[in-house]
Length: 166
Image (tube, rainbow, N blue to C red; front, side, top):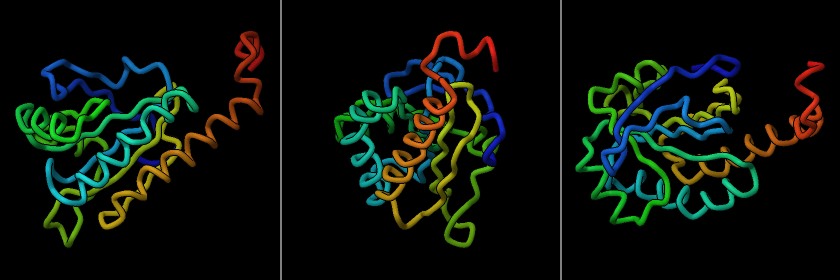
């Protein structure tokens, strides 16, 4: 998935077995793909997103979801262990990972760590790919959300009549 492209639709089970779809979010969305539950880098990334998700929701009117290839049971254990306040989705056959075009990392040995920031229409506004800098994904996402918010204000995004003239 590249900047300017619409994100693929998906419907996956979260850590509670509830189906979550991309299109149910009518606001900016941070979608982060991570290699595996309960691994050191993924724990750092999920914890950092969890620390910031309240501010992301309040400041940017956005939400966060994580996706990896483990099953719902694994997601439940990981979410409870970390006290996660956002959905992590089970992409057991990596179909959504493939639809987003998330590349493999570490010479093809590991699933990649990539964060996509989508606007409220589901169009990709920013992509960050870095396996090693797990915590950096959160900082990147917040910067991208700030840019989306600034561009909405600049284009009159808070004016209810602006959509009639654009």
